Structure formats: C-alpha cells, structure tokens
Length: 633
Image (cartoon, rainbow, N blue to C red; front, side):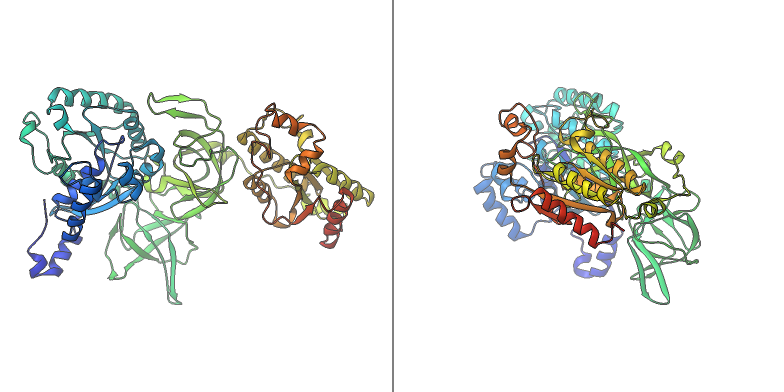
C-alpha cells in the first residue's frame, strides 16, 4: 500500500507532479459507538507508512497509558486526538486525515458514533463521496447504524462500504456476516442506498483491510483498500451541468474584471455561453485564468477566475451556470432539515441561510413531519429538536439560484445560522421550489404609505413596547396614545392580551407559539404603518430574534423599540392579574421570567426604568422622543 516512490529521492518534481494528478476520494467512517471507526483509520494510516517515527514512538507510549489493547498499539489513538476522546474512549469531533497510495489520494473523516454528536457526523458526510458503515459483528445493525444510514442517504452519499468489523470475535463466521448483510440491505433499500459492498474485516488484526485474509476464505470480494482505490466517483460531478458560485469579483486594475470561485460541477471552456443567476443575463467565457496561467478547460473541483466577453453585473453569491442548462431561481422551497442545536427550531423565527457563497434570511414554517429514523415513519411535529430530521417549507427574503439537492449536492445544500449567536444550528437540503411562489405578485397601488401619512400630518411608525408581565407596558402605551389623540394624531394599539382574544386565539405559550404570535403581530403592524398610522404594540415578546424579525418588516426609522425595564421582583410585587403567583405554584407553564426566559434588548431606542419613572413620566419621555424626531409632523 505504501507509495514511497524512488522519485522522492531522484526527481522530487516528477514525484509531486504524479501525486498532483492522482484522483481524490473523500470518505467517512460512521456507525455506532465502539464499532471500530477510529481503529480502522488508524490501521489505514499505519499501513500507508504515513506515521513519522516520533509520532509512532509517542503512540507506543500513549497506547500503554491510555490504550485498550494491552501491550499492542492502540491505533484508534491516532485520530482520537482530544483529551476527552481518549479519556472516554469515544470520538467526539470530526477528525480529518489525509493519506495516499500509488493509485489515489484520500481524505477520510472519522465521525462520532454517539447520538449526542450526530451533528458532527452529518458535517463529515456532507462532503463525502463514500461512507464506510462500521458494524460490530457481535451486535449487528443498531439504532445509530440506522440513523447514520438515513443521514448519508439524505445527504446524497451514493457509495457505501458495509464494514462488518470485529469478525475475529465471532470466529470469522460466514453465517453471522450473511445475516448482518441481509438485515442491513433490507433496511437500506427504502433509503435508495444501492451501491453497497459488504466486507468482513477486523480493523484491529488487519483482516481484509489491505490484503485478503486467510481467515475468511469464504469471502471472494475486494479488500477495503482495493475497493477504495477503484470505486468511480469523479466522473459523476463532471458530467453534470456547469455551475460556479461566485466567491469574489476579481478587479486588480482597471483593465481586468473576473469572477472567481470553485467549479462545483461540470466543465467550462473559453467560448462557452453562460448565464448569470439570479439576474439571468447571458455572456460568453473569454478566458479561464489561474495563478499558473490561462487554461483551455476547467472542471469540477478546480478554483478559477472567469473573464467574460460582456460587462454584466455579477456579484458575490451569484451563480455562473451553463446557458443551455441553467439553475432554477426561487425564494420558497420544500426542504429536508437536520437540526443541530440544543435549542429547538422554532417555526416563524428568522435564521440566516448560507447556500453556496450567498447568505440570505430564511424563515421555516411548521414541519410537515419529522422522521423516525428507526422505522422511517413520518411523525407529526410542531418543531425540530436536536438531531431530529424533518421536512418543512422555508421562505427566503430574496431569490436564490439552486438545483434540487438530489440533482446537485453542491448547489442544493444549505446551513442555518442563528442570527444572534452566529452558531450553525441546522443543515438542510432543497427538495424543490414551491410553485405557488411564482403565482403571487405584489399589487401596486396608487395611494401609498407616504400619501396616507401626509394626509394625517405624521410619520408612521411601530412603537414596540417590550418587558416582563406587569412592567407597565400597556399602561404607558395607553397614556401615550391619549396624548397623541389629544393633538389629533392617528394611532392604533395592539395589546398582547387583546390580540389573543381574536387573531391569535389559537396559540398557546410554548416557544414555538410565542414566535408565531409575534410574527402575526409584526405583519399586522406593518399593514398599520402602510396605512400611515402610529402603531403602539404592547407585547412581552421575550426573544430578541422575534423582535428583530418585527423590526425587519418595516424601514429602519419606522421601528422604535421601547424597553419597559422592571426588575422581576418588582413585577411580582405588582402582580395585578395574579399570574406570577399561579406560575410560582406551577399552575401556569412557560411563564416569562419564571420558567421561560426573557431576553432584554441590547440597544433599544428608548429605555424606560420604571423604578425611577411613573407611567405618566414615561409616556412624556416617549412623546418627547417622537416630537424631536419629526414623527408628529
């Protein structure tokens, strides 16, 4: 297996050139805890002679100290690099390793088997061409085996090696091997996993890893390395239509303007016609430029700069596609989502979506269903929890170019990012665009917001009062509206309790319902602003994300956040409605400040400290703010 070529000593440039032209296979190891994933990768690295002598010496010492193989080398320690992994004997993070043979280069991702780290496994699978599904021959197909199989099928990994490991612990039984092979194929068939190669092996002993084992003379298939070296994957991406997401507009001087990015599928040559999306402008490729000079052709996997024959507007995040077979463009989709955060996915909450090189705002709807990965049963769901997989519609704030994920993994996959923490909270696949999005158009009206506001001699805005229950939001809003009404200004009020008697009477107080509550109120408030009204909105609105969502539906100067700041103990002392008492007694669940969090504003336009101001003084302060900034005409 080792590729220690004589060229290294005699002609290093020739060696590097030969190495550069080898094909690359990305693969992952997955499966349940302690099925031997890390040991298998350690065996591959060991046999490829890619372990330096000092590293090998350190491995020998660590094997005696932390290993599980007595006096023998514990090869799993080569990739279980985190201290916590070595202490617990499990893989936590994704460990990427590179190795090569004379025939091919490899990047392998050792992914965690523990359910808690399923999100890390999915990260490794998202870029893999092949998956090695490890199964302990003593245990057979387990729950995590099924979960990982579902994920790799969802992520479009077409080639699977069913590595039935630890055969030495079942006396290399052909019967055990056949039973596991049949059970796995029966489960995998509905998932669409067709290219499955089952191999009996012992990663610890090296059976059928590099060379055929005499302990399994009943097995006539390839060894693991033989299969990895020969499985064909490169041609699949290159045969697809040309796609290149624009990473950077390259403008080093006035005489050069090119568009840089990685070609994710297909081929391109000078003279080929292209279409820029979402603008749909067409042109031709003039040159393919790289650091080493111009190319006559480029294909999937290469990073290049394209210059065009026409000066068309293309920006970062746009897609350059083959003119004859371009991407589709849409802003509403059905998607499959794997949720990766401890905090649940809340329908209606805005998240950032990164798809290719473009980042947009996305708002998921309530899931159509979530999937039981053991039975593949579709279950009803209001939200998605950690490691759950579901199908739901998602709406974006702008159109994006895309291919369905099943047609192109690189242009149909996305991640979801929390807007406040910037943490990746989910990954998803675009199934298809929703046709109804193309049938709905904005209807232009002759009388617009400015005309309505001019008639009222005021500047419309949303005054968003937020604070704990009992803070005095509604009282202050009511006093302010009386003052505005007294000077003939046109207002309307939306109060949290009042709205729940009608528009939102179907909603409860779960986090998901709170998000939908605010989403509806924000949309109604927007309509009120379009009518030219000063709109007073009094809602606890405990989450910053939803207040930001409400802010985003109108222009920046049309949203005024008013934080009615009252300490919890003061709000409890007031407790006019007796709600805190009931919440403390357990009679009311999900009550803000007690068993549901309140996230105070970080930079509200107006901060009302109710321990220092009376309600009347607070209303006067807000009135003065509106008057000074021209909202009152």
